[in-house]
Image 1 (cartoon, rainbow, N blue to C red):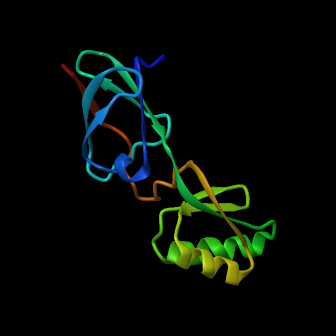
Image 2 (cartoon, one colour):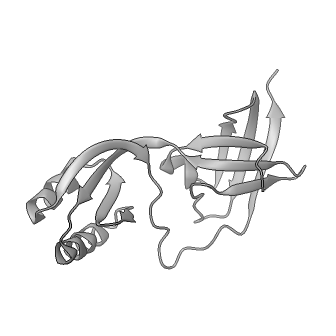
Length: 143
């Protein structure tokens, strides 16, 4: 499905139930209304009442990237970050989280390499999270 419009949103915006946005590719404002507890993932497609399609893009933001090739150490790091109820994106031997110097220091102390980057942040949604069953967006023209 080819989207009619796109919008780049940071993670804190993609978890809100209601949000006012300006579309990236048009001089339009819109409102997004999603189920409480739902998260708009990178690449999510939303349909408006008029049938137009909006693609949500995870905007680049300040993140820490903790990495190791040691599988046991990586599992320990996942445990400790999860134990702090921190939103985390899990990659191939890397943990990505919104920049946090306290977590950086803890993970360096465990033996991981931590770097600071600007990239899209699309964390795990959680084992008990609900899906994206209801998304609406409404267009309002700026005059």
